[in-house]
Picture (cartoon, rainbow, N blue to C red):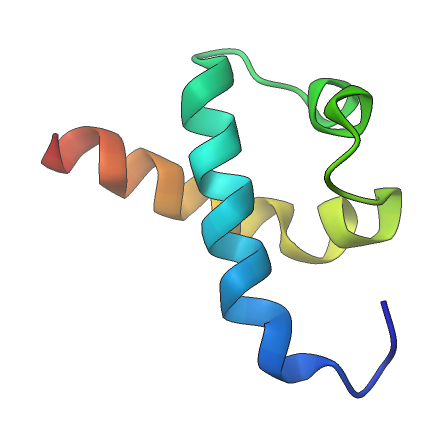
Length: 61
């Protein structure tokens, strides 16, 4: 990911949150990396925001 790709940030967080929900409770950083959709850097940068979004999405369902 390039430093100036901030416009992608909401999309990455959304996709990561959806992936977390599909994996289910107990999803780990390693689970996300094994799927191959996200880099370690993306997980470190956006993981907490994606976790919050995934939790909110689960509660709303």
